[in-house]
Amino acid sequence: MGANGLSESEKNRITVEIYGQQYTIVGQESSDHIREVAMVVHNKMKEIGKRNPSLSTNKLAVLTAVNAVHEYILLKEKVEQLENQVKELEQQLKSREVD
Image (cartoon, helix red, strand yellow):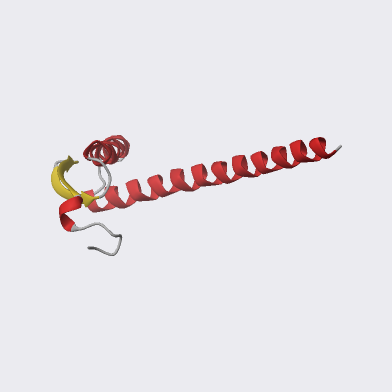
């Protein structure tokens, strides 16, 4: 068993194409999930590459990663904001029940 409790035979091994290169991705997520992740990365690289045609593939990959992490942080902050709103609403409901 691996560090995450899954044996190598329980992991999905999927070959995907991202921006003209083949990659083998191994993970516990479903094959569909892995393919979707690869497709999003591929499409983001194409989008950024069209706007910046002189970028090398390495620089394009880093810029794509920076964009993806930026979007992730924005979503994470939004989730935290929504979780705080839910807690506040729960507290308001509890205080009304006590009254």
